[in-house]
Length: 186
Image (cartoon, rainbow, N blue to C red; front, side, top):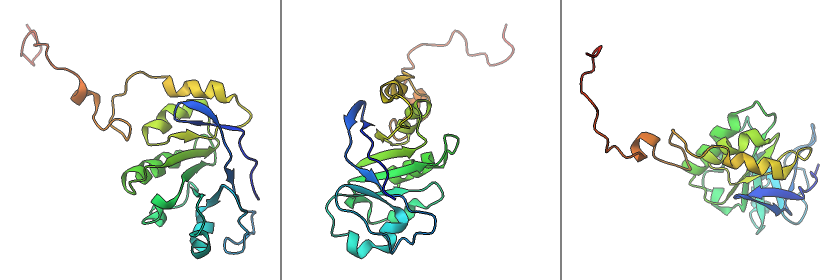
């Protein structure tokens, strides 16, 4: 089943038109038997793996990874995709964050990494930290409101894809302590 094209997505830090379609399989549909339509299509990982010989000839193709699939299946192929998407089946499922981080770090993917599925404003800042740079938010919510989720925080403490150094390594340490006593103090 071909999903409706999102009219708009967030790419980088702006709302832009989107002409990619996401292919989702029906419950009993076999990945090797599904017909992949022409045009900009993001196919399930299982379809890519089953039809790799045929689909490799396509210039504009994307692939999406389900939360219960292994990103390692794209090793050696990641760079050929215009888009790699990670599906969030529900808001509370955080496995996609780990997948995105590993696609960026272990597969060294530098292209568009898109969050799809149950994607809400509250997730965008954390998603950007692990490497996502595009977001197909839920269509029943305002995409312009969701865009504000990328600027909720001005500083981060932990290291991640977007900031490899933790705050304590970035902060200036010029101030001298009042005393060096580490005991109860006097």
